[in-house]
Length: 112
Image (cartoon, rainbow, N blue to C red):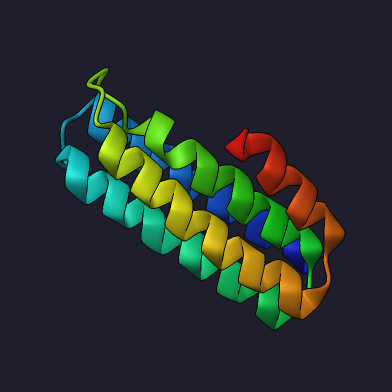
């Protein structure tokens, strides 16, 4: 039950940063993106702490969705592909140590 509450809280964090960037311009694009990266890393740590694959899946969805949530329409491919490489390396290590196969499948699908 606690992982459902944590997952809901993490989703609210992602959407709050997105709205703060797009609607209210509270953060710059770089700041909003870095905050979302920190949220993703925190969610991965929570998935390890709670030993819940559901939180790892939420971290994957948030991690892969972050570039789109803070996108302004510019095509900065170098940053995008660098970020995807780092994200996939992190998720690969998570899948290796925890043997969560669903992490492999979701990361493969979103990377494609």
